[in-house]
Length: 287
Image (tube, rainbow, N blue to C red; front, top):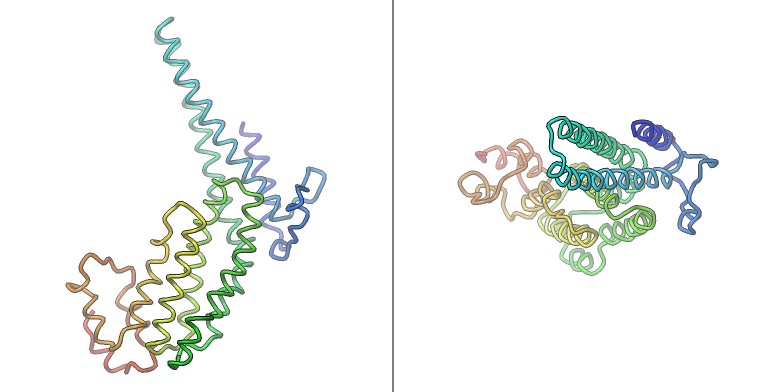
């Protein structure tokens, strides 16, 4: 079983250490032409197939463990004996250890595949955020409500990527990839925010964008994703304040059940992104 694990590990390393993934064409895979042992394995498609293999292996080990435990209970009633019980316990322990080993491999692989092969596909969709104007007039805001270029462009591009992932990945693998990607995408959006300047309408529009994105990611999985956007949601709250001092209504004793994910320094930094907030007023706020 460890030989199988090492074989999978080797195939994965060949995949996510290659520099050719970001521009890979998926046409062959979507037509059912999956990579074989005779074909180059430096592809995102191959990494997803290997992840599927890992997931199936984990599932099979878990099923075998449950089956063995059920049969062991029956046998112990019939034959008894501490020696037999010890042997069965040893077998179960070995299977549990193997399952844990494959889960560790899966976790490492999910992280590496997302960071090396998938995030480069999302990077352009996120980076465009800082190229748009976020100091909006009433007319700008009205237009953005109908046709927001960032959120529409992001969802359009993300749909293509996620459709391709679903075509290859097992549901369990897709959910794990999505969970990891959502964390990374939220962080990347956060980076872009710090490159921008806002007024109140720009902050309100960002908050609207975020609600749409949370709804979009929630539609892709049954897993809860809102918490992954908690920091961004709090940034949105700060950016659409009417006056800087209003942060006091949300901070400290005024926060109620809200648990702040942002530090006082980060809150001040975000307040400074508002072009209409004076630095002296921000510095006077007690956080």
